[in-house]
Each structure stands twice: as structure tokens, then as C-alpha cells.
Length: 514
Image (cartoon, rainbow, N blue to C red; front, side, top):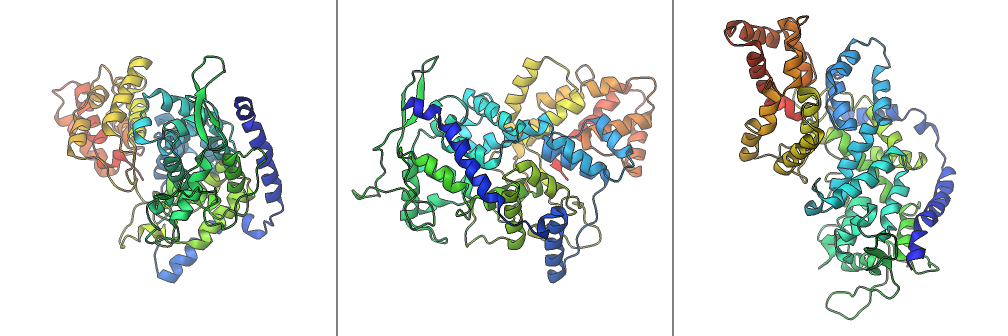
């Protein structure tokens, strides 16, 4: 049994390659010649029909902060922001998008995000060994740009050591079919199938039969002693494991959601492999749509279907044709997530400003103006360390501080368009050790660097704004900050800069992705 599971990934790769070949005969047509323009056409037509006035194109500074936070998980370094703002080339935004998508930062940021999605909250804390092992496996997949259907196949057919890579998806849920069915349907199908666990879904089409038939795909999972090097336990599938329909002695046979016929026969009765093949097939109407909707939600702060894991009749898509186009494009690109991120980020819609002037703010689900997204705790801390602390302190100490900050501030289930932190957390941020380190001249690399003689006060103020808010100051802000530096000249310069740094780091603007 263990040997069979060791071969699973190779088998799945072959099986999915057949799915890839099958997808190649899909006619692409003109709709994929210029995907960013097609995205914009769908949206512009909807704005015309609803008389919505979209926002203007974002400034270079606003765009640069946004795309760095979205694709790299951190605000732009000051020197790279200066270079970008000074670049007159018309294609500089496209080049920045491409460079970030091809960077290790993108892989690391995606691993951070997917760790949060894939693991239960109590298992996803960064200091947990399981979370670190999962993160490492995910990072490698995103570095290699593993096709999304292959990546998901790696989860759904995971076996071997129970404390390594995708196997943790199962052990963190105690191999319970009910929990695994609920998580898998939410994450990979965008469906809250667990709402039908105890009774038929009150709003959607799902029945108890649907839920328990889907749970049967995970009924054969077991933990056994491993004969691999290092010992420990391993995940394997054993024929004979079943789930029973509640309050009955009826054994549930596996069945795909929304499909009346049973799955194709697997020679070894490996049910999770059956499920993986169906996910990547054209007969599955959920998989590509759910993936496309999740990518859109990442970049826009909300999905075309919102919430992203409730794609049912009670949550219709705001732009159904656009969602279908994105799903079709993802399939046409053989589930290349980077390709989907690239075309969405290149669209005019993604590059519109979040600022509305002299007009009523359009509805969030119109995507006529960029939705402002609250930074995650990791985005804020990593930006602070990179641009303000500038690497001061030991790496071990920095990691300890990061872990403590995430534990104190993180809100895994928070809506990115809402501010998730309460008064206690905010006060802890304003007066916490991170803020103390960032504003003390002995620890702040930013403040120390501005003591150079070639800096004048105007240069110092501009650098503070670029480091904290990723933009130059306005004329009014420049004048106000210059006045403060001059009227408090009895204080040492570093103390005055420390005061101004504290102010900027605690503004609402510093906590958001514009």
C-alpha cells in the first residue's frame, strides 16, 4: 500500500497530462487575443448599462504600492519605488508586473496566502512545524509555476509521511471525511457543501445525499506506521473504509457534486485519484470558475461571486460573462495561475484608482474603482521591517518578533475590505515593540540613514513618505512637516524624524493597499 502511494504523484501527473491534451482542442477564438482588453470590455459594458462613472487611472505611486503588496506581499522598497516613478517608458507597469510574478517574493507570498486557506486556524500559525512544512512545499510549487490542477492534484492524492507537505492538509483535520469534504468543496469548488451535512441546503441545490456522497471520497484514509526512513506515521488509503448516511445503516457510495451517475471505475479503488481526475475534466463546472474567482478576489478585495466559497444560487456573480471568460482563459492556459494574474493585473480595471473625486462611490461589486484592501499582519510587518527597520537586528530575533506580531494582530477570516482589528489590537500596534523599534534612532535603519549630510529636510520628508506610504508627500504635507522640523529645532534631528515616522506609520493609509 505504501509503495502504491509513493507512485501517486507520478500517476496523477500522467493522468492530468491527458486532461491537458484534451483541453488543447478547445477553440480559443478572438476572445483570447487580448485578454486584458476583453476583461475591460465586459466591465465597461456593465457600467454603461448601469450609468456608472469609473474612477480615473491610478497614479504611478498608487499602482506601484498596490501591485507590490498584491503580488509580493510587501510594500515596494524605496529605491525601487524611486526608479519606477522616474521611469518614463510607457510599458513600465507591464514590466513591473512580469518581474514580480517571476520573483521568489511572489512564490513566498502565495505560499503564505494558501497556508492560511488550506490549514485550520489552530494549525496555520507560523511557528507551527506543520505550517512551516506546508509553506515550504507550497513555495516550491509556486516557484516552479506548477499548473493549478496539478497542484490541487498533489493535495487530493497526498500520501506518505503524515508530517510533510500536502499530507498536513489531512492530518490537520484528523483524516475525518466530514471535515475534508467541507474543506475541499470550499477551497477547490467554491461551494459550501457542508451546509447540507445535516439537512438539504436551505438556499442552494445541495442535498444531504450530495454531501455524504462527496465525503465518501475520503472514507478510506488511514494512518499507519511508516516503513520510510525516519519512521513515524504515513497516510494511506485502504479499501473498505466507508461513511454512513446519518441515522441509518446505509453505506454511501462516492459521487461527484451535482453529478447523478457514479464515478468511473478505478482499478485499485483509489477514490481520491478518481476525484482528482474529475476536478481537471471539462465535465466539472466548478473548478476553473472557483479558481478564477479566487484570483480576482485576491486582486480586487472581493470576488465576482462573493464570498468566494459560496458560489450558489443565493450568491449570483456580479458579472457572469466575465467570470466565465476568466475560467475559460485559465483552462486555455492549462491552469497557469501566473498567466491569469498577469492579464488581470494588466487590465485597466485593476489599474484604476481607489480615489473618487466629485462623484458618488460606485458599488464595490461594479469594480469601477479599486476597492481599498486592509493589509494583512504579515504584509504590514514585512513592509515595516524592509523599509523602516531596514534589516536591523538579528534574523532570529526578527523571526521571533514577526511570529509574535502575527499572533497578536492576524485575523485569518477577515474580509480584506474591512478593518479587522479592535481597539486593544490597535493600541498594541501604536505602543508595541515593533513601533518602538521602528521609531527609535538606535534601531530604525531609516532614521539612521537620513542623518547623511547630503540630505536636506525636504529630502528627508520625501524619503519618510516613500518608506511609510509608498508615495511622495503632497505640497501641503511637505509644508506641514517642514514647519514641524523647523519649529522644534531645539530637539535633536533624529528625535524629530522619529516623531514624524510614528505619525506616518499609524495613519490609516499605512494599513491599506490602495
